[in-house]
Length: 135
Image 1 (cartoon, rainbow, N blue to C red):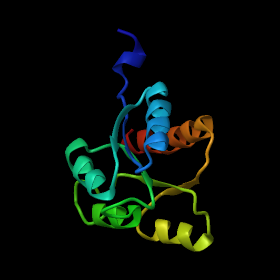
Image 2 (image 1 turned 30 degrees about the horizontal axis):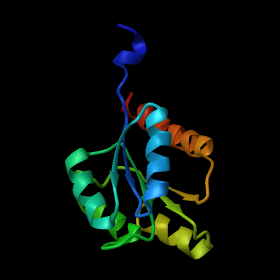
Image 3 (image 1 turned 30 degrees about the vertical axis):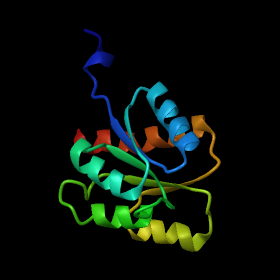
């Protein structure tokens, strides 16, 4: 068995209400070798996070039923979910919005549009921190 087959395959949950962006992020993360699950609104991401227990969540800020801010804040109140890193994906890059995202518990804020290669690189950076913490 090779060392790569023994390595843990990170799980990423992608929450995005716009189907084309959701599919782009899904394909990008899948091609990077991650196990990926998708949600189309804030309530669904909360339910799937509880069931899936991902290593990282990539989440849009503005979604139906529950915003990304609300979903992130709710996750931080749930013992099993509170330590899962959340990264917001948003077209809104005002400093106040970024600060609000960080205040509710996000670890990063990536502005749309983004290059898939840069998104992959940022996710790898964040997940490498998880590997270091587990060693």
